[in-house]
Length: 465
Image 1 (cartoon, rainbow, N blue to C red):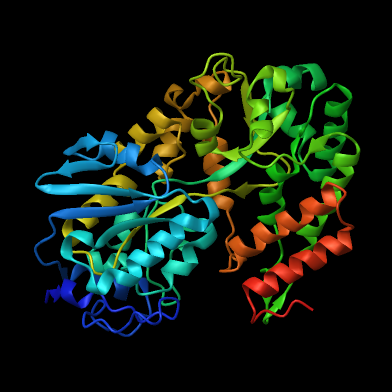
Image 2 (cartoon, rainbow, N blue to C red):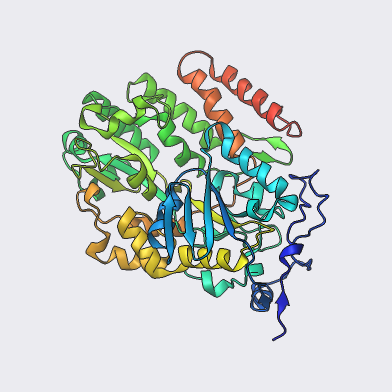
């Protein structure tokens, strides 16, 4: 087969509109080719790729926390830790450029680096970077990300992944532009002792029956409040409603508030007035009080990464430490978050980048190690099926419950058809505006007007009338 040489020198032109103004580079993106019409054509292209020898002495990875870093440190063969932000893979120095997401700082830093990529010194080039679901499209449909086919990665190599994890990072030409080790279907994580007190049972099936839809959830929330607990914050439930909308935020250039999002507003206000839910901001100290029994919180909403990152299982006195949480699907299926690994156009370590992506997101042995070490829901149907049918999937923080069958089933049903590039901005502004309503500082109509004004300022081309 005739090999298709991918010129790394030809990988740096930024023709995307988002990064317009930086396209004066003399370097270029991958070889220009007509958009393939089929997976077979893309695979044929991938199989023909012959990557040039890596020349980079530094592998720069951009991310917003140490989640993926810990997994690479633990499971990528040959990785040697130097310090918190530096490592070695063979003769290549690994530099972790970690910028928290607060106030969009991560994206701002990444954008600046990608804009400088064409003219960056070899040791400063971005090689890998991570994106989240809320803003993945911002990068996926731009030339700053390499198609995985340009790294020689074929569809067979990622065939065991859940389809939604690929849809979210597939560009408008049908090319896969990233890969994830996670599948982030999510559910309701409940306090077992509270469930016994309020519902008379902590059995996942019976608790699920009590929250099986929003009407039942609201009925149960009132019982929870009567027993002296708070169900959760209104901000915990938002994503469950928002994942089940009937259309995108912007349709035909016009802002649309979906009926299910509007229902979140009305349901939430009713529960606030009933004393069943509060308005604590996610990750705040008040919100976090529910991690301990004395916090008197009935549940949180979250995916598997929530187990590991948010419940403080390693701290004495927490509910997780005592194995006191249970897990069920909740009122509606949904997903939350996820992290995708993207190869940066212009990398001078394409072979190493390819091997890291393939190893960390498709190797079943590595993925199983990640799941059993970090209670992660990994992006492998085969591994999740194995965990679901084995005691290896039992989680101590869930009192020995095995959630993997439910998590795997949820991952099969994730629907991203209403995802859009406006999601992050609209979600942030909508929740911010509605808090004024929930806390009595505005009427609902006034809060909606605040939202529309904010959207107009953020997206001037979108009609908000």
